[in-house]
Image (cartoon, rainbow, N blue to C red; front, side, top):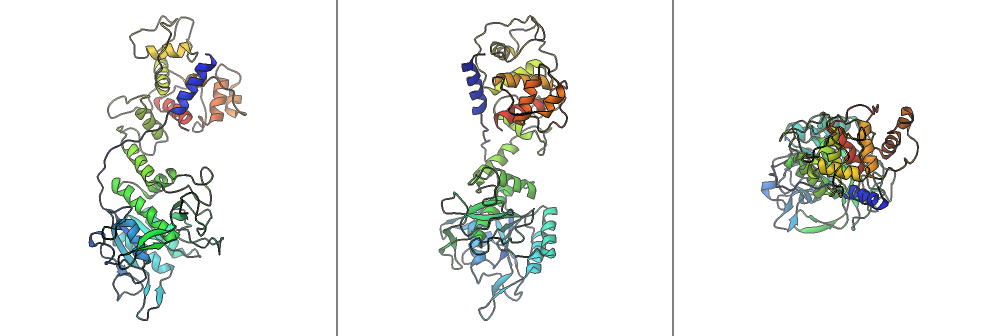
Length: 467
């Protein structure tokens, strides 16, 4: 295979990208607890509110006297009258008040035990799926920790703020945001390119969301400006509610994974303590959710490690299912099928070769053009000078060699303990490359002669092409 063809194949492999399934989904109301200062009914329309409770002053209503809770609510559901668009306008909000003003105009606020009780009630009394707690305590209180653990067990996501003291108390860590199962939200700057100067930076931060110079609602229903991680938290809470509205079966872990995996990097690639996993990208999270839900196969569970590879293979026409409803991930592939998978993955290039040297190949078979391409480019070889044996089972070593040859037989960068254990064979260099490239990360014990099943093959192709 000449250098031009090597480069073309590598370019084809690297240029394939995931596509998102585009379809409309019905949304159903999701109840969101706003544990805060109450919500003003002059600012938030009645259809977005349901009965809550005032914990700090039980004799009072849940009307907001401080403004903080109303600003949160406005970000969540918006206000048509004020021209403020909410992140999840279909949500129903439950105001649970633990801070307010007393009859003397003094601010009164409950302690962590009160916030913990509000979490329990949000779940057991009010049927909420998401809890927004845009505040935090500097101490790890057992009652709060236990309430958060209870929420996780009951399938309820807690979202909390990272804090605004980075410039005055940069080492401060706030709870419940610091708990592992809580989505902890920091603020992005106005441009959305970095964390805001006031936003805490520590390993509790999971995501950033808008947090500077925001338009929020006042108690009177007018628009005012505000900054802070409290309001960033509301954006993430609204995003979680949107996901749950589309798929009520999502667990809190599912929602966390969707939002963090689709966040846009604004710092170093991957996780960092300034920006967490990056800037919230609700559109990307919804697209990912819809892409996952679009898979028609009943034998590919949502938690299957090869699920993303199967989705990619279906969307990019690498292979279809064995039936309309099954993928058959554990079905062994033949040599002809393996070559066809690879040919499809690189875009089905038209071969120039007119015929093969193999006498056991029939020109009318589905795999004929793919095999011509593979032979022409030195990707596939026969089992003898005149036989390809298309119906023999493909081994793991064989599919790795096919892929390795298709990208130009590169030399492995660094050592490979897996390859070293095999000795020098016709597939050792390919296995070393695959190991160093990360294709064998899920193979605890690599067996080169083991049959390559459909999940293996699409997995190898997906992890190399998509990463």
